[in-house]
Image (tube, rainbow, N blue to C red; front, top):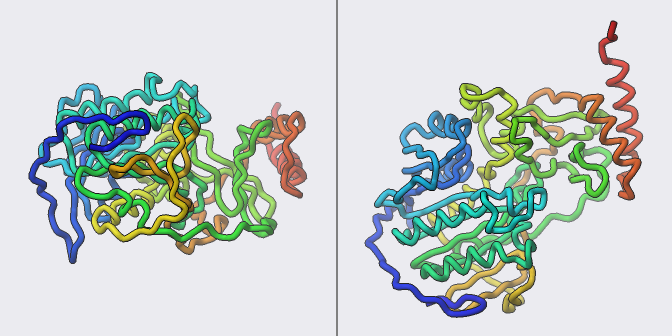
Length: 411
C-alpha cells in the first residue's frame, strides 16, 4: 500500500482484467469516461492521441449542447451526483474538476467549497470501480491554498484507493499555443508508474523575451491595481468570465499600437479547438456564453500530450530529489509511487514547439477595446503602484482618444 505524507492508509484493491487495446506498435488505446467534461478539451485531446470517450458527464446545458454535437458516439450524462457508476469498460477516468473554489480569482473556499467539493464524486465512483488510470486537471493556486490542503485531500484519497500518483504544473505555451496557461496535471495508476507519463518529457523554458516592442502583448483590462496579467507574445490565461454570460476576454496591445480583444473564434483556437467548436451552444444561450465555455476549457494540445504518453509511456530522469515537506505549499511537481511523497527539479515545459507570433496567430479581425473598458482600466492604473511596461500607458491613452473620436455623435 502507498504511504501518505501523514499516515499509512490501506484499502483492499480489486483488480480487474483490463480490455486495453493495442494501437500501432506498442501504443495502447484507452476507453475513457470524462467527468466535468465542459466542451471536451480533455476528451478531444485524448481522442487525437487515439483514445475513445465512452461517457461524457457535464451538467451545464450549453456545454452539453457542444458535447452532443462534437462527440455524437459518446453518452452524454448530466449531473455527476446522479451518475451511479462508470461504464464497465472504463480504463481511464479523466476530468478537469470545478476550480471556482480553488482559483486565486475565486472565493478561496478550498476543497470543501460547494463546487470544487465535487471532486468527492470522483472518489465515490472510484470507490465502486477502480479504473487503471486517472487524469485530473486544475489551477496551480490549489498548491498554495490553505498550505496545499486541497491537493493533500486529493492525493490522500488516491493513496487510500491504492493508486500511485504524480502531478506536474505545465504551461500551455509549451505546446505552441500563444496563451500563458499554467495548470496542475495529476495522473494516477493502479498498475504503472505515472511518472512515465508526466515526467518523460523535459524541454526547459525558453529564454525570456527582453524586447517586446515589435510583439503583441496580452493583458487583462479588468485588472490594473494589483495585477496586470501581462504576457509578451501571448495572452494571459483565458477566463470563464461572468456566470451571467458577460465575456471578459483579455486585451492585446498590437505591434501597430492598437488595443484590441480577440474574436471568439480565435479564443477557441487559443485553446486548441477548431473554429466555431462552441457554436452549438448558441442553440441554448446567447453567443456571449461561448466565452465562458472556452475560458473554462482544458487546452486540447496539453491533453493530447498526456494521451500520447498514456498510450506510450516513456523513460524519465529526476534531479535533486527531495521529500515533500508536510503542511506547506506544494512544489510544482511531486509523486508517490509507494515510498512516500517526493519532488524534484523540473520545468513547466515538457515540450517546446515552434509557434507563430501572437500577432500572426490571430486569424479573425479583433475588436477595439471599448471606450468604457479602456477608461476604466486607465483610472485603475492611476491608483495603483504597479510598474507598467514602457510605452504601454501612452498607447492606452492614444487608443482612448481614438475610440472617443470614432464614437458616433449622440443627438
